[in-house]
Length: 118
Image (tube, rainbow, N blue to C red; front, side, top):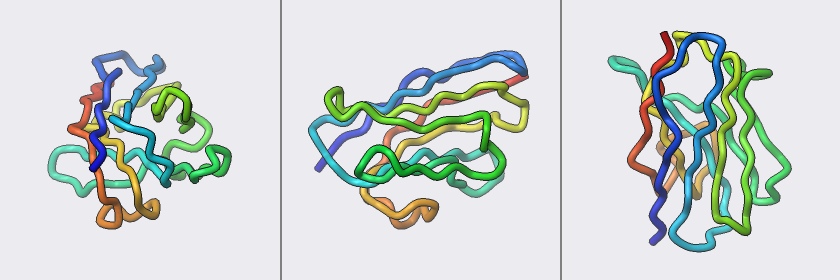
């Protein structure tokens, strides 16, 4: 079993940036992804990254503004979020061992970190 702990969320104004981090409790070389869920909406995929750490995919709604990356040595997944918009407001989750963008396919989830953009 692997534990995932997100951090880096917060409240910002539109146009500002945040960087989310997700640290794994142990080395776990699997596909990973970031998802988000706003109140009353289904959980949706934001970005995914392959085991190679190079192959990535981003949702159309965040393409050009968000960037997923990982540092294998630090066992940490990142989501750099620039030019934030109010519609990006949601709880953000990292997930491991699954096929993006299907949240039901992922085996492990963090507890989430709140991002609020006003």
